[in-house]
Length: 323
Length: 305
Image 1 (spheres, each protein chain N blue to C red):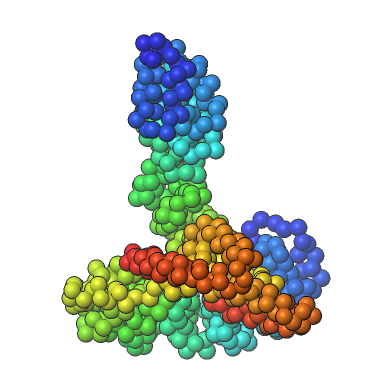
Image 2: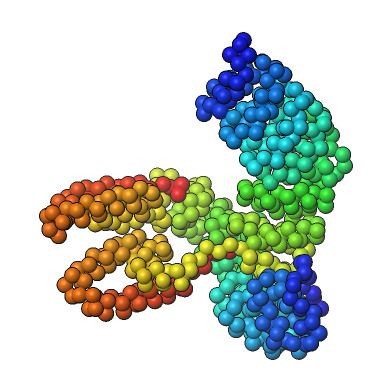
């Protein structure tokens, strides 16, 4: 049986609980605030073997992520085939990536071929940890890709980019699918590959990369654009269509128009609050003299000009291609 | 000033913000020679960082062996530039008595200090003895291929590099640990899975597999990564007490606008409807806004690991 080694020791007497065979107590300890105790509890539960399986399957639904993670680790050590379906469910639906990843590794440890269809699907996941874990688990289960598509996803999951390139234009579709990965490093690795493949489909993919929210991916796309057949003259236009991640110019302008200073504050200027407090004090003092509306009527033409200025200021901040 | 041997005046100039003036003062004090050593050693105890940097530079120019213990003490200064300058100065002094201290400085957490120490060791004509000492030297020089060639003896210096603030250094260190493939790197690699930098975490996954670490250790290691998720309770409470600021906390630009509109509306309602009516209208609304901010925070997607 695989043993989870525990780094260091912890104050809680896991040994005593283990001797008493108190599995519910150990499951509770999986959620202990000390990570070492969590780890020890997971290891201890693994030593119970198949007797602990049902407890651990129940613990996979615990609200605390640490308990679910520990239960997955223990099930991985026990390797009970009854855990395959619950682990597939966790790998599909758990909101925490680490737990999904652990469940996938545990599926590889069970040695059950029943897990293979699910693991093949996880090769297409949008998270690189899930894809990598699935490829490792499939390898553990001695799986060999029986078609080119699965083989490509398998190579992408292992980030074996040389092998992916060798598939040629057939790799474009899987690469575009994995391009959804929220990690920019993966997208950065994919863009040059699409350029190197350089077929009709990858030509269509390059503009997507040019509009990526991440500056490093956009730059890779610019470098790959010649291979993709994108004319240099079209690059600025394509880049201009990118998703802007900076401050909203309209929001900044509206804030400064209505609440002078808050727009600057929104743009990250520390003195925005100071301007706002001064403006509000002036308005209140003027209201005491002139009534509730006249001060605003006097102020608005001025704040409108400031609002327009803020709009252009925010646009400039938002406009850097380099991010 | 040099002719007059105005050591005090020259030391005062060391704290100048103008690099040219400071450099001239360093050279002038160097020209004064060992007569300035005592005052410069005293200047090392001052708080002004520029002054201390200049004093170390001047001591390196003078090369008076009496300054070596004070410069060695500077290797433990909390300021990175001071430690770096001291390491370089000790190399300039040419006194091999500083070698043990410089070897210790190779274990610094800062790449500048380590690099300065490695260069100084060579300047002092010191040849590292045995693989472990070479490994610390190569870690200081950031010679990754040499570290890979050394193998197991390089694990300790590479672990030390994982404490560096520069994530690029940590990425390279983790990658090199993977290339070495020594199982003793396991604790360091598992710690690196919880690194604040995304690329370091991923490299730690790849390296751990090359070191033969059980994959089941990895998700727990990754679960220790810092998370920047917004707190739903804070968002909810802010929106309940100061409607709009909960949205502002979530990065919505219009949160402040809602806050201001609420203040204006409250004042007007208070004036025309009285206290009781104002609160009976606004309290349920605030509750709804608080619940809404709490709800949308719980649904925010987590940062990818």
